[in-house]
Every structure is written in C-alpha cells, then in structure tokens.
Amino acid sequence: MNLNVSIIQSELHWENVGQNLEMFAQKIDEISKPTDIIVLPEMFNTGFSMDSEKLAETMSGKTVAWMKAQANKADSVITGSLIVEEEGAFYNRLIWAVPNGEIQVYDKRHLFRMAGEHNYFSAGEKRLIVNYKGWRICPLICYDLRFPVWSRNTSKNDSPAYDCLIYVANWPAVRKQPWSKLLEARAIENQCYVVGVNRVGEDGKRITYTGNSVVVNPKGDVISNIAENTNTSESVDLFLSELNDFREKFPVSMDGDEFTL
Image (cartoon, rainbow, N blue to C red; front, top):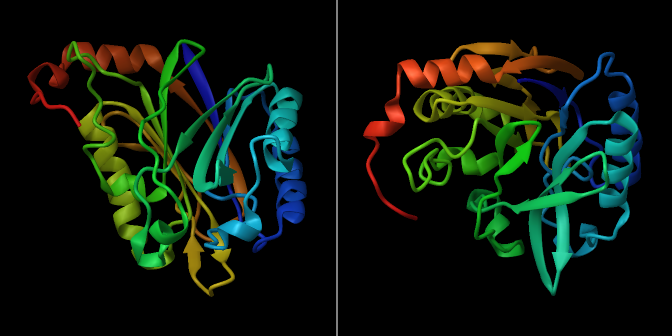
C-alpha cells in the first residue's frame, strides 16, 4: 500500500499563534493533490521559544482544535508540535490529528539543553507508534534525531516496529550537515523511510534556519529534497511493497543486538 506524505517547509512568525495558523491553513489549502499525511515543523505555531508559561495551550486549546479542523478539511493527518501545559507541566508535544477528529500525542524525549529547553519543559517517557492506512509510523521531534537508541526499529520478536520515522524540527543552519547525515543514517540503520521537516528563516533569537527538509528511502537515498531557504511544500509517495521486499531480501533486523531501554 502506498502512502503520500506532504512536507511543508516554512518560515514561522515568532510567538504569533494567529499568524502561523492562518499561514499554514493557506499552505495546506495549496497542496494540489490528495495526500495522506501533512507534516509541519516543530513548534509550528510559535517558533522554538522557551517562554512556555506565556505560550502554552491545553489540549482543548486553539491550536489542537485547528489541527483537528484542518485534518478533517484536508482529509489528511496533520502533525507537528506545539507547547502544551498539562497538570502544571509543560511539554513540547507532537499532535497526530486524523480526519475523524481523533488524536494521539508524543512528548519530546530529548530536550535541547544548549537552548535551555530542559529548564522549561518536561521530557516525554514513551514513543508513539501510529498505525495508519496499513503503515506503522513513529513521529519524533528535532533533537531526538541525535539519539539512535530511542529510534531503534525493533520489537520483542526482532521484527521491525515501524515502517516510517518522522522528525519535525527547528534545526539551525549552523548544524545543517549533521541534520542531513543523521536523517540518512536513521533510514539505513532502521531499514525504514525517514521524513524530516525543518523550518527556514530567522527566529526571535536571531537564529537562522535553512530547512533542508527531505524524505529518505530505506536504502538511504534522498527521494525528496526541498531547496534551502524556500517556503514551499512537496508531496512524495512511499511504497510499502518496496520496503517489505527490501527487508525480506536483506533482513538486517534478524541479527540485531538484544537490549531494552
């Protein structure tokens, strides 16, 4: 079964939820063909801000409601992260919103201490693996990319746990080379598709971002690559039959080391 994924690479309006939601609504409307999943950057409604107390929303807040509405309108999953407050704690939370109004969530596990993220947010404790249209999908957030154990693609019976990794990010231009190389590495070592969506432009801290949003196939080949510093979207088809055929002919997971996290 094929899966069409649309990635949106965009500048973000610093700490301005209304402007960002209006902008992304237009960008989603401009996707010209039917698609199964639309991926937005990390903290797409505010930019990568540490002002969690000012910007946090609840799960019944404006942005989650917007994501549900957009998913229904586009007949597509909408996913991206935002700042969420829950029981007095703040999370960099990825929302997975499906067209029927249901949602699932993943809280960022690895908090970017070089920006002080660990001082303002609580870390997540478990991965999310979504079953959608015959695919198993594991969405993660930005700095998670640097930690291969967290994304390791095995289950208890040594079979792959997922078919596709998604990373939503605010990954600065100064480290664009590790971003690109690590996305390819995760695809190769986990025998899966990898989708990486990053923002462009300059944020309120004068940090610049070049995007370099990509889709990588299980062999590590880049099959979609949005040009640097461009505000645009791109849609790409992923092929489950090709993935399964590759895994069957080259069953790396059968020889993996056993350990638990």
